[in-house]
Length: 177
Image (cartoon, rainbow, N blue to C red; front, side):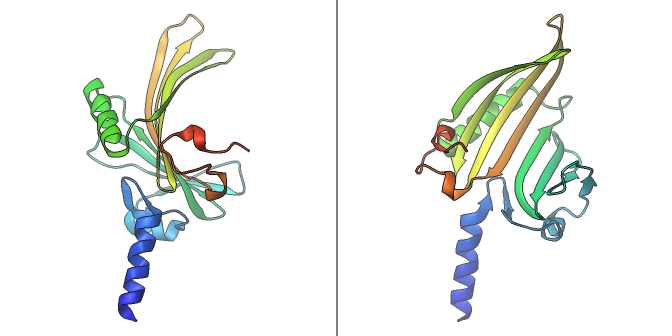
């Protein structure tokens, strides 16, 4: 019986493990997350259903990790890199590592325009089991088209199995609502 329980736990961990956060699983509560990241800090959100917790790793190129919980269950993680520590070679290396692990991503350029600024960037997305992994680069420009800020993030999110068209590494095979 003990072997069956161990096997079930092992299979569950493999199925719901999050790439690059293998110790965590989708649906974890904040108490479970604090077991691995005891220094997480609650962040104010305007939504009553969504809670956010920030973790600030020390001595890394990551500025912060944001854990998003809906109804107290983990559904998304965003890693925001520190722009003062990340260089072009780091970005290229990370992209290459992800592509070697998970194949070619679905790549999408984007541009958003607002009254006082615009955002341009690229999003590269892989599907890994029940998780999408999006590598996102954003450049912010003022009204005179001057670069004012840049961000590099990796977003990990739970894919609702009912929204999957079929097994694929392409994000465009996820049904839209």
